[in-house]
Length: 256
Ligand code: 0L1
Ligand code: MG
Image (tube, rainbow, N blue to C red; front, side, top):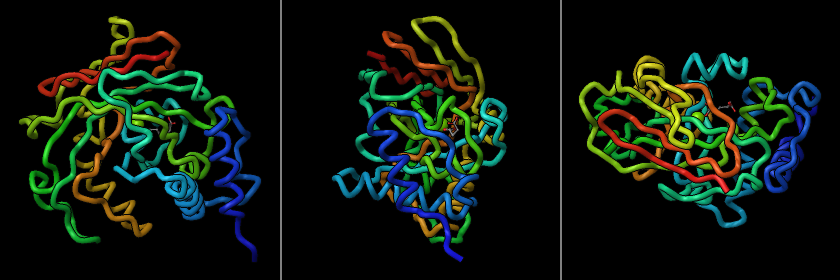
């Protein structure tokens, strides 16, 4: 039996991102299951690497109940981050480069000494050198921000851009720090790091396990986005976005 056209689906998703044009969902029509969807994601990210981008990290998606409820998909997923997606703290993004961008407050880890594939994380403080507040900008390439599980995996879990704030040593109580998302100085979302799988450290276990299943190893020096602590908020032109995590400080972004 002939499987889904991995390269063809990756090309459609890549062109949708490049031209900021929404496309219909693809998984049902092409018979994409979860494993085939990760193969499409690999091809989609390779398309970026072939034009000179570098892999700089991994992101977890749908690690909180608020996020799962927002998009109607209830499994933890992961995607890849490249250098071109990184926006400096306080930097600007052009909303016109995206289809229907949303922002969400996250916790980022700076990866250090990681276990061999298949091994548990063991000591979190060996695996993670530092922690930072972060903003993820997600942008589904599907019309109406609507998708199935294989669709969103194939679309590199809606990864589009991210901002990392100042790095700090891992603080006490990482499993229950207050999180705030402000737009133009007004509170848009309030949450806790506890919303990220009960403890954001668990996201690293899940990342190692789930990415390892697809032969992907996390690397020292990579950024690891553990997931959002709240639902995502649409990003409008002119908005000033600030994500604050208690004990860690803030990351910010301007929308042009
Ligand atoms: O980072 C995320 O949690 C996003 C995962 C994909 C679902 C979405 O686009 O909201
Ligand atoms: Mg996210």
